[in-house]
Image 1 (cartoon, rainbow, N blue to C red):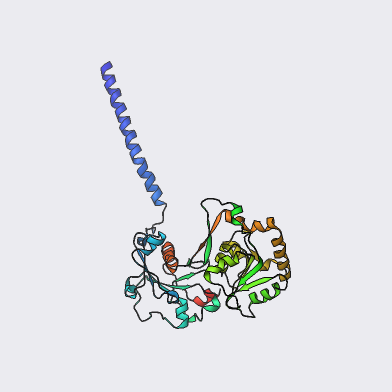
Image 2: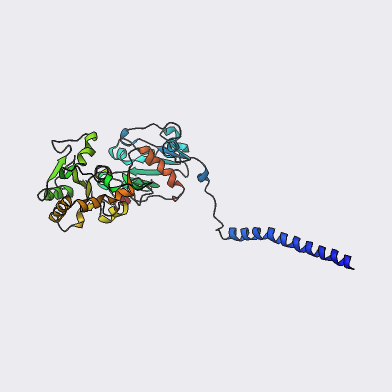
Length: 355
């Protein structure tokens, strides 16, 4: 009897073990099935995530072309699966066709409306100009699927510049230029008397000395002399030629920030600057009740080394990145492509541009 009981007990233990093993094997499958059912039935992987996206540039901006040898987007900018081309013969296979507005506005180029447009192909309107310089756009209603602009609400934003985090913090003492010989300076080529920036300049120079350079004056600057000259100024007048939403050009990023002068900015509202630049790194004209008050504040800062140096604390953590190569701007399209609505069409491009 004792021997029989031992065998029976052994068989019972084996059954329990097999049952437990089966349960442990089935449980993960049940959990996986329950998790999978939480996803919508229409959820699917976008096939374009795993293939090359072909970007066709219909014409080069301002007629200045660059090399597109080999895998440009990957070789230069480490953007994968992005094929940038400029051969119009590739139009039928292009995922995106980009048209730079300047050449369209001047009549130097035209849209290929006579060609059969492949299903799913997106046409992109691209401009870095302020709205006033984009010409008439009403004829482009219901044509473009994508906007490429400096504006933050564009489908693909390509700013003139931006600040990127430094890998390691710098030392403030190395970042505050001290060889200052002029209170304020301004580089201007196109001086139009009725522009707001011209009026502010006229009022400001009555309060503080402003050194003016550029084609408008008899003291033009070469590209090599630009930043060294600005570095000798306490303040740089980063005055935009157009007061437009998000329109912040190289006057801030290159001339002031890289030149080593505190930027006095005039352009879009203060909030637009705060969205892209750290606090206490610029002075906005609109922060003052009058230009006279602005001038007096600049004079005070120039005389107070400690207060002036606080406008360079951003250099601890940030470095300036300029966007000058159109290839980099165009390759950026691929980074956004899969996140853009496939059926989007601008029914009123002109309204968006002027908005």
